[in-house]
Amino acid sequence: MTVKIDIARFKNLELTAHDDGVWVVTLNRPNKRNALDSHSIEELVEFFSTAPRAGVRAVVLAAAGDHFCAGLDLVEHHQADRSPAEFMHLCLRWHEAFNKMEYGGVPIIAALKGAVVGGGLELASAAHIRVMDQTTYFALPEGQRGLFTGGGATIRVTDLVGKARMVDMMLTGRVYQGQEAVDLGLAQYIADGSSLEMAIALARKAAENLPLSNFAICSGVSHMQNMSALDAAYAEAVLAGVVNTQPEARARLAAFADKSAARVRPNS
Ligand code: 1HE
Image (cartoon, rainbow, N blue to C red; front, top):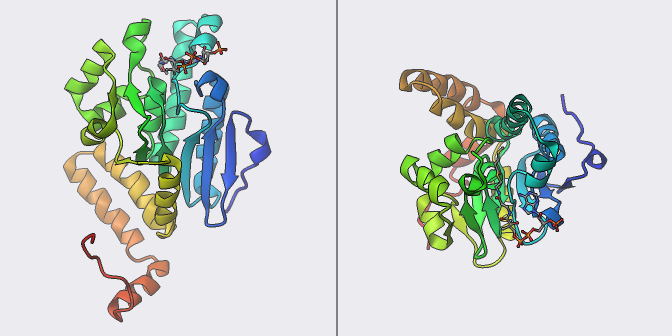
């Protein structure tokens, strides 16, 4: 069953669908440096809950303006004067959105620029591939603001950079940028020019894969990381049983067998 995404319902996200099934989802509050207010989070939940059933082949997560995302909307948070329970429930909505991204089975490529900080880094780290440009920098300024991460940084950013670097980033507000950020794993690619262009090219490449293969890649790896090695091996075998016998793969296997398919070669 394919559901339809009603683009007109989205205000803080701008959605553009391309013919090849690649959707560009743009955070669209540049005047607020794309800070995530509660409405933006609800739109992320809505889009990423629906995308896996709407024929979306890959997503580029982009941003309007010079900065990817400034994290939690601190002004809304200040004005709302939330209770502990209210903020806990808000954080659970962030987790709902970011888990839908990480476990939804649709490849998400983040096109980063400028500030990727606080909850903005939590959002970026829920994508499957991160592309930065020369202006991009990463930080977790929560500690300096009297706050703590609430959108999954303790899990996903720690996964990317390791516990010691994560704690250092939070304690000291350390900023990472340039090639060092790639070397640490905060991004997988650094573009000389536009990160958006590179992200779209990567999304197009991913979108050429069969959707069921991408589903397995973009949900299975994350689920298996949460399991014991024994259970992960079992789940991998079951998933491979489904994916590797899909009828849609027959033509690709036939092309390999008759030598018409491209071979894997080193980069020239
Ligand atoms: C914002 C926000 C925001 C900008 N919430 N409104 N995140 C932070 O601690 C990052 C806070 N922001 C910054 O450090 C800077 O704004 C930036 C480095 C991102 C950009 O600097 P700049 O000089 O380009 O912009 P600006 O002048 O600081 O801000 C421009 C406007 O964006 C201004 O609004 P205006 O109406 O006065 O024009 C700012 O108020 C607004 N703005 N950032 C609200 N974050 C689930 S827990 C997650 C925990 C967190 O994410 S804590 C947040 C960490």
